[in-house]
Length: 445
Image (cartoon, rainbow, N blue to C red; front, side, top):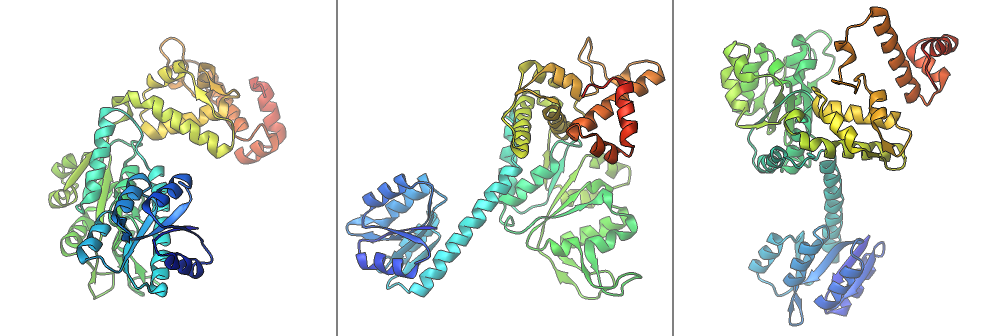
């Protein structure tokens, strides 16, 4: 860790070098010298301790310079002369903390360690946000990113709508991470994956002995999400029996565990997602109207991939780079005609389907450039004439079975690096039988 101390008093710099023996402490006696050090060592300074009064210079000017050029450096301001107004201004400009002189070295050590911890957390948070970033240059994606920024700054419930595979959970993660609750882990609940008889316990928790099998107390998802965000995926599948109870929790901000008597205060933000039309569900009596309005204060609609085809090339390139990095191979590229062919696919699974397709292309391609022949090999789509899907062609059943079997075995061999024994073990056949089938189907290894 590197610590930059900017003070025109050499004793202060020497003292901090003695206090922080475990860090590399660099001293500067003026703003000019500090800027030189920062510019030369741009990537490795973690914390800057800056005196407010550096002779005739104002430490605030250095703070502005650092926060404008290198906002990742945590700045701690120190002074024996500054007013409260100056201290408040420095915090508003991005200083981590303000410490009065004469310096308590025990206190400043705590402050600097806290600043380093904050920097580590900020770095991890940035990496998490990078993982969930929304990729694309289409107008709809630019608008989506603007809405995400706005939604993250307020604490109202959000309803995210869109087809399967468009990235609803990614959007929920981004809103959470960018919000004031982002320091805590988001709690997730897939409403479509919970049996109705277990829903109440899953959502609200239960006390020990509340029902047969309740051998210990269990906190529900709502209680676990206190001071964080609860993401309820497939909210349209929430049983009617639980909808009124969820509405009550949203209004009262209290939960009572199953079998319990005490109300527990909860402070959580709710983000829901669905690929259903909830307005139609309300009209059909399958979803409560009052709950619908309660969870949809902010509605974010994510467009399907077919409505923003200009993003397909960017997404495909991103997924291919990911695959190359994860597998430690040289970077590959996709030829323009392959991108054009992919754009003509229905891609009903949206981004999820595109990512899966690119990963298969990576697996099938032996060269640094992905060609149309790789695309033909990697999918069940034929890129001749009208690019018909195998299942849309009419042929003898025996021929269709043979083609499907051949495609499946070719894919499995590729995924297992042509290891016959491992492939046979994983697909549940004997190695000799697999070899016979490879020869019978004319599969080239």
